[in-house]
Amino acid sequence: MGKVIWITGLSGAGKTTISNKISNELRKRNLNVIRLDGDELRKIFGTDNLDFSNFDKRSRVELAKKYSYLCKAIADQGYFVVIATISMFNEIYEWNRRNLPGYFEVYIKVPLEILFKRDPKGLYKKYSEGNLKNLAGLDLEIDEPQNADFVVNDYEGEIETITNDIIKKIF
Image 1: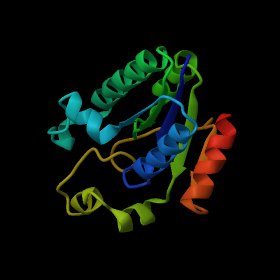
Image 2 (image 1 turned 60 degrees about the vertical axis):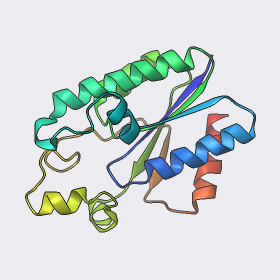
Image 3 (image 1 turned 90 degrees about the horizontal axis):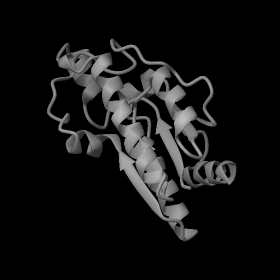
Image 4 (image 1 turned 30 degrees about the vertical axis):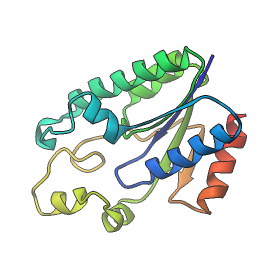
């Protein structure tokens, strides 16, 4: 049986960076790892071209459920799944805890003022200019994880240290 490492946080928090590091560390241990990323999954599921204003909470929850089902199907085959996704909804966290083998939740908690400064995709700028709606954590309500297995507070520490600490907690 595999494990699912679910890395969540708002856009620009560093989910992809941390998921890449964790995946690489697990591969160094000769484990079979599949890394999934929300940006790539939206392309696969055909939702990457959606206007955010039409991508409401219900649509996002439905997409997050697909991510969860995919993670389960892969982990049930004995793989470690490392997924980086916003998908910040209580119904997703609860389903994942009940259904995903070896579920381990990582929450990357970064203050909005820092996310606005980082803004690698320009989403926060578009939002500030009034050109974007339904941005998670702003005008789209999200549920902050209350029972995350590991919380990263705005990258306090080096990425290698954070990754090693997460790996230690998983094993």
